[in-house]
Amino acid sequence: MTGDISTSAEAAENAVLRISCAAHADPDATSVEREPLPSAVTKKPVDQKSPAEWAYERIILYIQHFEKQLDQDHEVGMGFAGSNVGTLHIQGMGFFAPDMVTFYGVSESGAKMQLVQHVTQLNVMLRSEPKLKDEPSRIGFVLADQLET
Image (cartoon, rainbow, N blue to C red; front, side):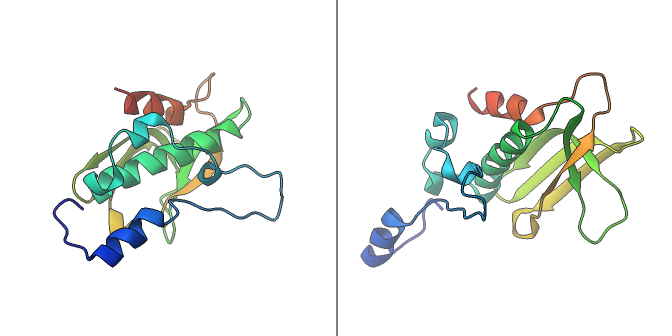
C-alpha cells in the first residue's frame, strides 16, 4: 500500500515476486494466470491500489476467462459456500476502497441479490448456470470494457 515503509531487502524481494501462477493436470488447459495482464489493469501499479480495487480487477479477469469457456445456453453464476441461498447470476460488480467488494445480480427465480464482502473474506465460486434470457449475459466482458474507462 502507498505509504508503507519497507526495507531495501523487502523492496528487492517484492520487485521479483511472480504476480501469478497456475498449474493444471491438463497441459492444454488455459487459465487467466498464464495470460498477460490487460493494459487497463497494469496502468496503475499494484502498490497504488487498495486491496478492494486489486481484488475487483482480478475477479473481472477470472469471470471473463470463465465465460470464454461457456456455451450459448449458459452464463456465469456465483455459488455460496456454506449457504442455501442458491446461485447469484452476476449482473454487476463493484468495490469500495479500501476493502469491500460487491456483486449485484438475481437468483434463479429472478429475485434481486447482492453480496457484499470484505476482501479478507473473499471467496468466489463461479458456476455455469442456464441462461435466464434468450441471450446469455457476458458480464465479464462488460466489466473488462469498463476497466478501460
